[in-house]
Length: 511
Image (tube, one colour):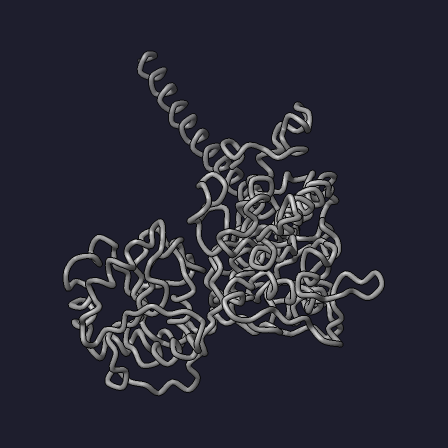
């Protein structure tokens, strides 16, 4: 009996112990869950993050609102925010009240404090001497003035084929206009006077104009004026504290003509280039990950009030230009021999001489498809002439890179043909003849929608070429910032000279 009673006591104690442990487990679990809820509210969860504690708070707030689905995504990419985190001895960002944020947003953008609104790219521009920019247009400064007075006459850019590479001119005008007392409301970039506040640093050198006008050496010159100017540019820019601080990683320069900046590019290549293509650049100096492709300025007349139809454009395929080209342009003469006898194909030699531009305008306006064939380089102005004419481009250029292609689907209004296919007998003619009225009309309508993305004008307008280029630059800024931050990982343990920030680094290990 004693043994039985002892067993009952032990069993009772075991039951009590299990109940106690279960109770303690419930209490501990509850406290654990409550503690995590407190931690998430104070620091960890994206839902409870205070964006004011983060760098680039506007960008993060915009990303947060987009991911929650509370606002519809805008067509324009947001700016990457304040560039203060790129410089040494950063000052801690101070949180501001909602009213202060609203005032700052209105001052910078002309819009309210909605984080989904377009944030303007902040650009620091060097006050280069006029000989690098408007002095090339025969503009004479008054006194110590570096820039033209917009209240008087703005220097005009030379016409003809010079205009197709005039991108640096339009971008510079746009930055200068942002400082006017009443700047244009629609803008994608604004000039700031403090480099620490900028997203990018712009070098306003009219490189294409310098090449077009001054690349030929006079008999009494050892160097052409273009080369002398490039040497002076490299000396000036690399001596600036902004360049030394980043090694040029956060700088921007336009070299749209394929031969522009030919001598300086190997010294300034750490900067982001704005180019027409990569045809004459080694891939470690210029590439699609680092640089920005900009459209040519079309030289033929835009087709205003276009009411044409599939049937009112009698020419099937249109090409007029230089037929015999070097390098990748051999395909032009091969296609000439293939297409010259087709009755509804116009394929002839042409130039800007003898009213060539007006004839090309008329020809493109009356054609269904316009050939854009690789020449000396993968790109040509003919593509943008075709877009302005609402003539569906047929692109035969295997290595072409296109403007804004990260946000624009060219297959909706262009036809791409591999070179090897284009050179097959009857391939191009059969391809285009098999595109019916409905399919062609759809592409024709799309061309009219996207045409504004390729229009250069002053002042710039919402969604035009100037603003689209600035937005493309803005999309490069996060990658620039990341590479610059990575370059500073060992800045406290390695001398600045060894990190490469005080000299021009080698292309092989820079990016």
